[in-house]
Image 1 (tube, rainbow over the protein chains, first blue to last red):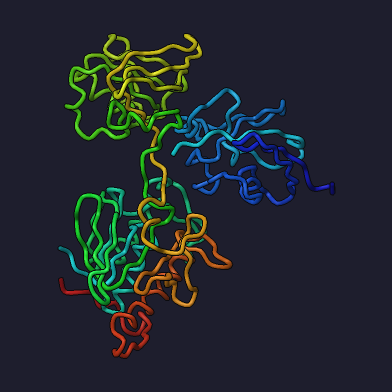
Image 2 (image 1 turned 180 degrees about the vertical axis):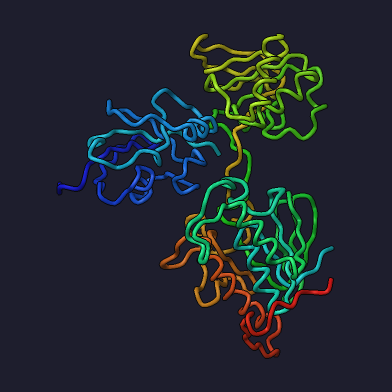
Length: 109
Length: 336
């Protein structure tokens, strides 16, 4: 692994884990990384915390930034929201989240 | 019956600007959109957000861009069928299509331009097992007629404006009303939040916060909803009706059935003119796909501009098309 990449594990809705290498120097967020890896994450609004289509559960113990009011508002429109629910578009790819493990939340129709 | 030259499915920024470019070539447009207002995602998802990559605008609010586009296309007097979903396309003659909406409105045109973005906005349905079995049989995602809920035991779920507003409106109509919400705070208008809290205090609304619906049960019709609450644990609540109000999300919808080449929810087009596999039907903006595609408003404007040139040649194969700059020729709108 090079200096500027981290690894994150994303568990898809079938329970299969995907280890993804992500660059930290390109201002990516987790939703974009999932999409780039062809995981079934919609990210309809493009990462503005305005659509709730990139809902994930954070399974590892990483300290993440608290969700903004916008993110909380959008989580209200998501389903099966748990205490560890986050919008993946609001999780910045940085050294601090190396080894992060998340699971994709179920999607509505 | 509505007749036009170019029928545009989707009244987002790209559909709107296409009216302008079509108008310069003396072609009239009619737009259909499932949302009750023009603007598409810009109006529905992010009207108050700034956009920084519209050429010539260092920054513009999405809602403002929609207003400006509406102003820009005014001389070309577009027709609008709003709040109706484009449902079915039939070829009724050589170079004539008829589109029918979900409300039965019929529009005829030789050319159809699909500028439907991510599809049409529909209510978000909770991924609860068997929920589809009770749709219209106790579960509604939209309140069409409040009277339907008179003297019923009602459960509303959601924390936004529509959940709050319907709770207030239906409090006097339903025999019993419960509102469940994931958090303790609401994101709706302050005034509505205060009203709901007051109703809860007066025991007119049963408010359960930090709770979600996780199951639905019944025998043909809905009888009870299973609720998971932080405070009360899991329990079942007997109800006649359950109204989950979780906002709207876009779905490709009926467009998928129109015989177009579709690849991962996008319509494949020829980049020469953004035509689809069906003659006379084009796809522009976020809904199309081609090598190198970028889902940007400015790219959609370009696509619409090239598309109307092709549409003109398709409709009038013998007419001569002379290209004029607006700076030279001005903008000559339609009389009526």
